[in-house]
Length: 278
Picture 1 (cartoon, rainbow, N blue to C red):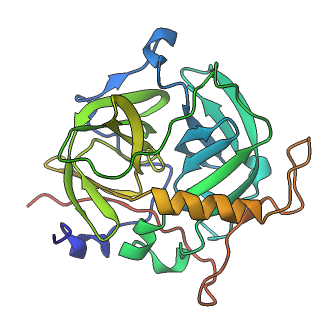
Picture 2: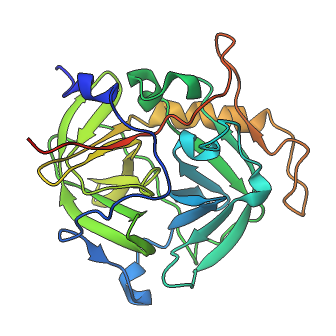
Picture 3: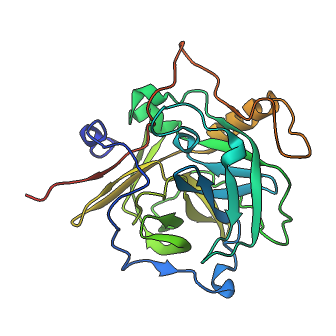
């Protein structure tokens, strides 16, 4: 199967923390504590100058997009001492709020390559928290096997214009799936990077993919994500090779990316674009 719109990816603009507000008519704002039931493990990752969305896959492990670890100006890895995961954040309150102790981006993610198909395929990172969040407070999500069989999916995310509470799109679709990538028609925008895409498996919502890149346009909504099982396995292995976090949550090495083919850090690789009207 041919992936949709591969030519669009090369033209995507760099992700920034300021952008026009997305159309939220298809979204449900999770305002009340009861609205969050089942989604407590999704949270906002606060970074210097912006934020991303992340999701717990273990009591102390948060899955998000790799590009969130890189400073948008310098292209350098961010110091994790300036990162905080706020589970179920809404209107100034969090179910749990924990600093990030250490983090690793996928080894094959290359910031200098921009929005290449390979970068989207590997745009995932794993954050280890300074302390665990009990499952009774925020139950981690399991990964989906990757076979959706055309079923509807859903996305829970933060975003520009809706940064103070999670928004839930109850139903959107997989438009294409090939070469380790997915194409979705979900309503995402700046700040939704790293948001979990859920698909049902054995009657439970499981993480099918993460939002990596997208197109913000009044006439169409396209977003791209990656297959996760092998990516997460690699990230866990990378994390095991890093120095252990101290009780304070600080590290001698806070963030890590194993270089591939002598790659060097440059600009961030995540993209959203606004398509001009005809």
